[in-house]
Length: 276
Ligand SMILES: Nc1ncnc2c1ncn2[C@@H]1O[C@H](COP(=O)(O)OP(=O)(O)O)[C@@H](O)[C@H]1O
Ligand SMILES: [Mg+2]
Image (tube, rainbow, N blue to C red; front, side, top):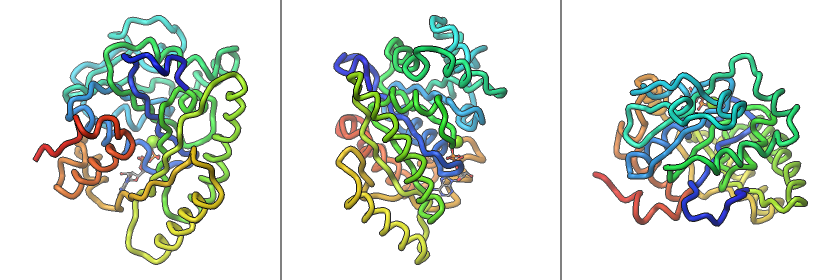
């Protein structure tokens, strides 16, 4: 939404959201974050989920004493107090440190609740890219993360119950947030990607139905990318060993490279060229 949308030094913000747990949000945030960082983009991951999967995905070189709680509560904090450094070059992290869920009620009680995050992000300096991971249920922390984004990336699992929840929950949230348009804000374009795709007929059927839905029911602000992330044990193994999946094999490299290029075409030419 981008209060400073046209400022040239403003980092590009991707929010990964879907109102469904287990739909590969954190996995995607970790992999695209590392890929962008290793390809020269100074990248900051922000974990806003109270279950801090992304916060512990990669080993750290420096662990900041604070995290999202201090970032959102105290507003003016020293970057080194809240920004941790991963062992991956160029990849920093604001860890989620809100296990007892204090941030959401605090934001709900604040007049600037859903908008504070946008303002705080616009004050962060020194990054090309910010990737925000969110929790898998509708919450003010997800609303604020969508409102602060330049692009909303929604991973969808190709199973009928997940697809129905996507339509009810994630699309419902997006429509609710349109109310901010009355105050002059523009919602980020929604880019959905089907994840964990195997070769079963059920997955094929649900994927086709999703494509039809996007073409016939949704306007151009919402796109289902003509690209899928396969269901592969490599993704779970990479998480087990705390490494990016694209380091596992050439085919995973190609998948993450293509995903990053589709989500951030503005960086593709200069940054996402083959390293191998
Ligand atoms: N492409 C994939 N293939 C196989 N397993 C995957 C893939 N992407 C994610 N996973 C696994 O799915 C599970 C849920 O992923 P996660 O990223 O934690 O979801 P979320 O953040 O949406 O709750 C994890 O065990 C993860 O390793
Ligand atoms: Mg997660």
